[in-house]
Image (cartoon, rainbow, N blue to C red; front, side, top):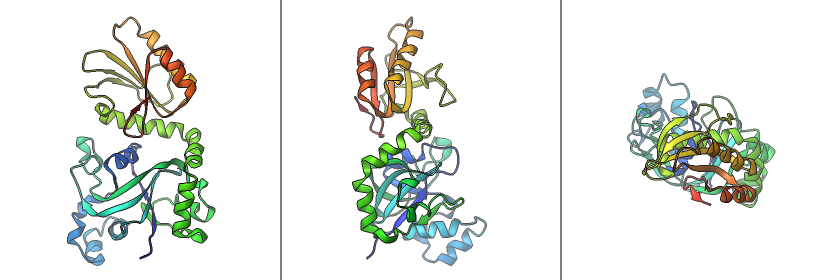
Length: 291
């Protein structure tokens, strides 16, 4: 059986953290949850009739339901960015218990149509323009939630090998151009699930913008009552550590104040400065590995 490649838009609103939730829950997902469990619908016409007022809903859901184990998935976010690459690892599920499927009022996304996906560690957060031209031009079409992508001359295995062999280059190419997108995704994820960074952490105050350097992204309290300053970055260079050091200077009168810098990638220069000034570092790929 030949395997296929699909691009799926991760969110349809201002939730930049959707791709991170997909990665954590190990799924790809799609909306139109009002259709109910698709395992009970075995005919496209029935699905189309049920969603007759939802535009492309029926066709998108049908494509999603028919995806096969081993198919390749590109988790596609705004600004022409592919956040993650993965492979379908299981059958269709209607899931409302994990973060992706949970109701939005509970901090979830409400995307209950799900497929289990084994997400690769890399490449991640890279521009579609880094793909071979015949593939890149198929992505980024407005209004399309899910699309089968033709790999062209490379074929399925050729594209899979291209992504594997160029994983580091693709990831590195996207870090600078996607700084605000990556930072926004980390911030929104932490806003909803800060305790995943450290058990007991609770937000006291959160900044709204992603570029303001006057205050840290979050003021929080740890389980011992200490004030914790948290700053998020896409790539944490040396200047990011000095920025957090300045925050510490502003709050130095508060005994027990801690500082945490969370980033997608942390440079050696940043680590050196952070170590000198007791700034805690976490590289964020949803596991928050302490550096």
